[in-house]
Each structure stands twice: as C-alpha cells, then as structure tokens.
Image (cartoon, rainbow, N blue to C red; front, side, top):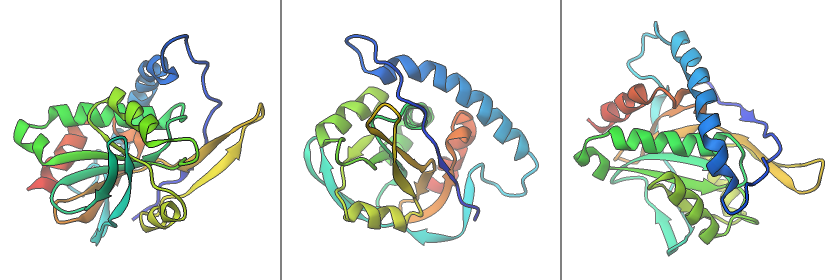
Length: 217
C-alpha cells in the first residue's frame, strides 16, 4: 500500500469577528478540494480494484485508544461500527475542515440504517492547544464527528500504529502549526483497517459512499 505524505500548512487565515475562522474558509476550500478530487478520480478510472480508496493488501487490526471528549472520558473500540478515523488539529486552515465537511456529506448520503452503523472520529494531533471542549465545538460545527484529545506519549504511539506522522512547525509571526499525514482511515465493524482516502479524494462523495457500503457488506 502506498503511503500518504504529510502536507504543509499555510498560515492560519484571519478570523472574522464573532465567528470561527474555519466557518469562512470552508466553502472556498471545498471548491479547491473538488477540483483536486476530480483530478485524482480521473487517474483511477481504469483501476482494476473495486475500491476508490487505497486498499490495505491484507486487512490490519486497528488500534484501540482512550482519551477525553467534551463529554468526558472516551474509549475507542474499533469493532462494532464502521469508522472513518482522521487525525488533525483545530487550528488547521485547510485539510482538516475539508475532511470533516466532506465526511459529514458522505454520512448523510448513507441510508438511515447505514448511518447507525457508521461513525466519524477525529483525533487531535495538538493536545497542548486542543482541549476536549475546543475539539467538541470544532467537530460539532461540521456535523456528528466524535472529537477526542489524546495526550502524549499515548498520542505518538497511536499515530505510529496508523502510520500517521506529525510535527510542530514554527510560524514566522510566532506560534506553530502541525504538519501531518492527511489520510482518513476506514475501519470495518470487525475492527480492521480496510482502506484509506487522501483528503483530495473526499470531494467525490458518491465513490466514498460506495467504498463504505462495500466495506459494510
């Protein structure tokens, strides 16, 4: 399986008064992602594989973990539901809001029964700034994703288990951003990693939905 490379972050956009910056940014970002997703989809039209995402050669056990959500302690068991798992951070100016927005669109295209068997989980890679309450507010804006804070060193071990890389990168004006792997992992209800999507693929929601439905069968 080919890896997904970390993506650099641009400087965080200026926040309009009284509203989170990502509210203003997400519409423009979705338009850009749609273009990139179309290009990615074109390159895969003749793929011999039945899935749109990048498939694991052999399904691999997904790691469980514990952390904090806005509601309190949270434990993730990979089995029981089909899961879209994404690692990001709330100050992310582009990839994270794009990913969460499209995953919510995908969820809404599933049947009611399929929605009950599907969940989106967002793990912050910036636990120093991302409190459970902040993560909860962030994920609620985009829909029904469960946001989780996992502290170090448990976060580093969890990221390694999913081959996710992340690093703090200083910003010229002070502060920092997190450069990180942009993949979303699809885990089946048996708790196995089945495939992943790069964020540029998520704009083709119909094909992402088909991947999920095939994994649910």
